[in-house]
Length: 224
View 1 (cartoon, rainbow, N blue to C red):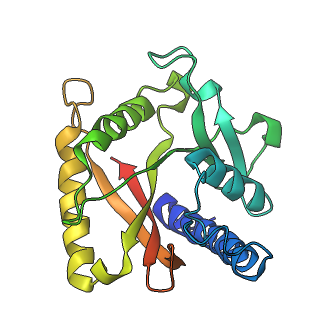
View 2: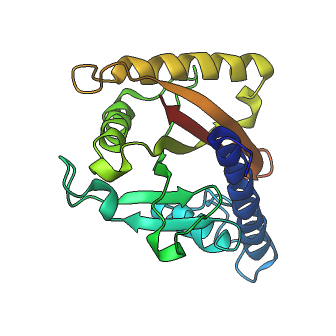
């Protein structure tokens, strides 16, 4: 396999978006064409419908991409014998060719934590989301010694109002969020660490009405 990890992970994110876009269309169709469309008139008409939590998105991605990737969901080994012992890694992946190892002996070479997040109208993370982001970045780096060389990524799911979505806003979002994320890294704990945005894409989804359009986005950050 000649692709580098960033390229592999960008492809993975595109596949994840394809999966979630199909569910988005299915949810919308069931609501709009169902017998009780009036009952759901105040709900979002897609992937943003009430109760779509991060574990649900992770489950949909994991179970629908099992045929394309070697993956471990809710990994307990990643944090064992570390300061984060007892916690679970959202997703581990293995990229590359297998030599003499069996599939059971493979050690994930990519670690991913996933989180919902929310932005202000100015394109910043809300301040009450920052501690959660900081915890996940720190947690990823406090892995079991056998995973210290695994590439570490932080995946975020979010919605952006379509009428806010311009090329200028996109560039502003990229710059501001990168600055925010790097500003909250505790360099006493994580020396010389920073994160960079390696994937940023999404699809249109419907809010509560035909005029209430959003972009569902996946942001993928690499810890370097």
